[in-house]
Length: 452
Image (cartoon, rainbow, N blue to C red; front, side, top):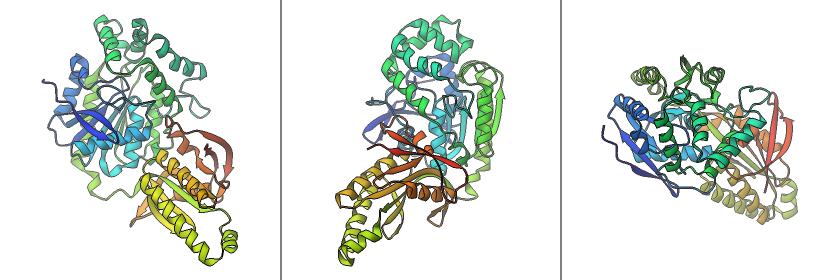
């Protein structure tokens, strides 16, 4: 087929390269792993055939993530939040109000966060060989250990252009083509032309090792399909089962095969499962029954430390003037970082954000600006599933955010580990504040403070 035209969507200050192909009844966004180029993909037989089949039953939307392929380069690495911003920008550019999302590999984390945060724009979610985290933990035995993690980051910088290294990577993610020298050569060329330099790949891998979306999976409320191959050498099938178990109502399909990349091996089996699932969801149209009433949100609570004593010290008139200035400062920062003011009670604010990094930066800016007014604030953040009822936000995540704020020291921006785990690559730094019991909230919660 003729290669589709590459266009550009504006995401903040960056241009994101995208293509649209096919005229199916519903929109489908497909993004593979890091090494991509939307034009080079059509030059490889397996990849092109895979995309053509997706476009046969959908309006297929492809894009290169910021920093790679034909999209603008970036300094450093990109966060999950920025990646979801790019998804939204591309959907807006093509006039898509709602789309199905098909994420392969580490793109699954990006689409999982998008689906949980924007269920009103997500028809369905398909995850293929998706890791919720990359590093091993006491309660997650399938990730890299410390030595494997170190080598995973260091090897691209030492051996990026070495064909033998590319062959090793291919043998891990697509062993079924390991003896095809022509395909190996094509992958070497793609690595070079994708714009992913040795340092960029190492930085991207380092960031992925810090990401943990396990807390996000139970908040996904759109129809979800998890596909896993039984002999995948890179992502064990136990991981696929785990991901499916964590997403409410998710359908799980386990297929024969050893390849981590869906367009190699028995790609037809993958495509058949995906097409059947997405077609059924489109025909049933579950989103028409009710608007989403539960979304993933980052909540922020702030209040003035020792406000009663401060009011007594200043007197009623001066205190009222100070509160007016305080409210103006807070609202200015909320507007700057796309926060939504939900409630104001006395000297405290309750706001929500669609991105945790924006929420952290906003909280820090508010605390700094308040200090310039001569008052100390404490701030607390948590990312979790919230209920939306007649424009109001409620649920355990809201109560948890308030309790985190109450635990903060004067001038401190305190947050749950969920917030920290979602902002890898942001350049934000944190101090470990240990495990806490929060009044009225079951369990123990690991808290971190933003370093200033």
